[in-house]
Length: 193
Image (cartoon, rainbow, N blue to C red; front, side):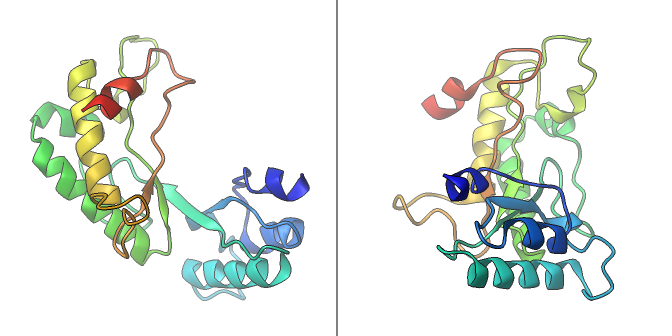
């Protein structure tokens, strides 16, 4: 049970903190850009990621690699390209461009050692009190679903078979804020396209 619970956790700690706490059980994920944590042993964030992967794989019973994730709403990890905010992408109505942006975000995330991105944002903004409208593609459910679908295709790549959607330049999507934000999600719309 302890190992199963650990696979659901995604701490925002440094590599050495995660390894100390979860080297025996493994861990579900880790925030890619925080893994270095100012530790002088690591020359880069990627060195910290590699050290963490090796430690967890060799120390835990099942040897399951750590999923390393990063924010991906409008760019990959630190130092990557910064694209316009999602609200501006949605306002363009250029959904083929969103697929290209998604592919670039995934490619840069993989170069940065991340296999999962927090994107796309599938929140339909309907409540002006929320204040984070820039993260959503639109207040229109149809536009949000089409934009989210195209961004997902760009990030994950096309699925030729159930186990083939994550190529070396692709990342897994973690769609955001559908259950805990101020308005209903469009999950059913996205998956019906």
